[in-house]
Amino acid sequence: MVEIKGAAIIDAISAIKIMNGDQAYNDIISQLDEQTRQLFEKPILDIGWYSLASFMKFMESVIKLTENGNEETLIDRAGDVVEKQLKGMYKIFVKLGSPEFVIKRMSVLNLAYLRGISSKTKFDGSNKAIITYTGFEKQHRLFQVNILGFYKKALEISGAKDIHIQYLTRIEEGKGYCELEITWV
Image (cartoon, rainbow, N blue to C red; front, top):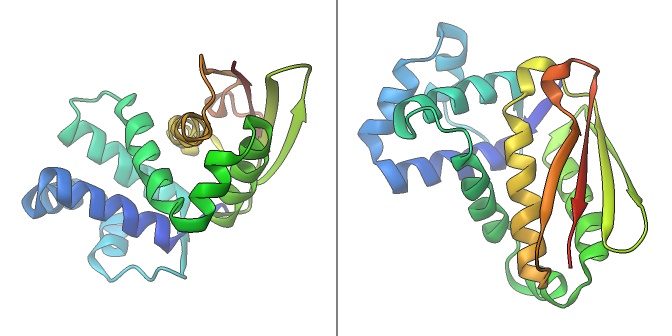
């Protein structure tokens, strides 16, 4: 089973409450199935591990109720979370680091928040990387939008320009992995 660290869920809940208010959060929770709702009605522990599938159900409800079904808004939300995670000294390293350094670090950072997933990064020529994540299942499909936001924001912080990110293999294809290609100037 793929799991996500509680700290990431807490960041998402906090962002939702700041942007949309407590009542919107309660409306989102009320739309969830019983098992998933019970998870979100209890305190989330920042060091705990929780089902990524349940978190994806939560995010689907968020998108439906606060974003009119527009999944692309998760790219910016994920970018906001990355910016929060990259505080202090680490943000300075990212800012001063090359895009290659940032891509390597983001792959590792993503895995610090996900259990049951592995990643492999291959740099293919100048200003191009291919990242493969193994372990995702079809029900995690929405997480690929988060991944785009993570890389986009981190690369912007590092000073990369003309960033293009595309999936070569998408999670919903059900192959057990997803592969994305990143290019930049």
